[in-house]
Structures are given as C-alpha cells and as structure tokens.
Amino acid sequence: MLGTVARGSARSKKLSVPAYIESGTRRVFACAVDWPGWCRSGKDEQLAIEALASYAPRYSVVAREAGIDFPTRAADLINVVDHVAGGATTDFGAPQTPCRADFEVLSPKQLAANEALVRASWAVLGSVALDAPASLRKGPRGGGRDRDAVVAHVLSAEAAYARKLGIRMKEPDPADPAAVSALRDAIGEILGSVSEPKPLVDKGWPVRNAARRIAWHALDHAWEIEERSR
Image (cartoon, rainbow, N blue to C red; front, side, top):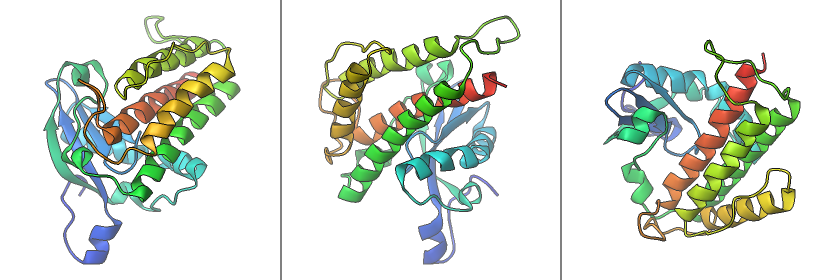
C-alpha cells in the first residue's frame, strides 16, 4: 500500500523511494526526498501520495535528461519517512517546509544529482515550451497564463528563489538567453557545491530544499503547459 514506511530486507529498503508529507490545512504535498521536483499535492495524505505515484513516468523524463537512473517501479516503491507541518504557502499550492533530510550534510554524489536534476528540469520546461502553442487552453473561467507568460513567471520566481541562496541578480529577460543562463548557472553552481545544509543567508533555504523547490516550480509549469496544450 502506498504511503507505508519501508520494511523487510536491506535490499528492499535500498530500493525504496523515500518521501515526506507536508500538511497544510487545505492541501497536502508528497515529495520524493532524493528527486528534486518530484512533488505533487492532494486534499489529504493518501491522495497526495497517489498523485506523486501517478507522475513517476513524467518525472522519469527528467531523470533521463539528467543522465541518472530512475527506479523502474518508482511509483510502487514510495515510502513515507517523514511528516512536516505546512503553512500558507502549502495551502496556496507550493511546497514550503524543509524535511529532516534537508538538514543533513550532502555527499558529492547527492550534490551532483541535485544540480543535474534541477538543470534537467529547466531543460524539460524549455523543450515543452518550444513545442507548445503560444496560446494555451484556458480554464473553465477563462483563466491561465499563455506560454510565454508562464515561462516569464518561472524566471521571475527563480530570481527570487536565488536570493534564498545568497544570489542577487536582476530578473532575466526571457528573450535574453545569456541572462537566463547566467542566473541559472549561478544557482546550479551553489546547488552542486555547497554540502552544508545551513542556509547561506538569513531566512534562506537549505540547499537541498532549494533544489526541490526550484525544480518543482519549473516542472509544475512544464506539466501545466503540456496539459493545456492538448
């Protein structure tokens, strides 16, 4: 059953996909600890876990882009290892609270994976946007950004997220690839090199949590573009 803590042989534990639950008052997130960006939400814990599992095939594209092996049966291997309290941001629709694992010192392998998967998330968003129509299908009340506005929103958010890592750079113009690359390279350099979990600035984010949030935001909008292109 989804959502149970892994038990059994050492091999089964090694193959499990650790996840944590972040609970707000109206929304619950399930996030894979070791796979930045693989986070989905639901109205309760079980629905959030089911949503996370259903997105395993889509996240496998990110892992492949990063050149990292993704478990074949990842959806069946999800095991909840931690619970954290969410807040207003959780209920608004974004993961907010770091889990216990985010405060552990990262190994060189974990650092490399974090950077590669975040960069892969950006690449997936870029590829999806390139293939999408400029005008996206609207919601039932006519709401929703069009493609270029979605991409601009992601970049604007990343300039704010970068400040959580001590990076202060101007929000890049989406039409200026050099500026976009400069911001993302600065983010990637920190995600791939800072092993200490202590935030680099006051009110900043632990590096592992930053990788998760940045990748989640890019992928959430990449998948939104895909769905609204149909």
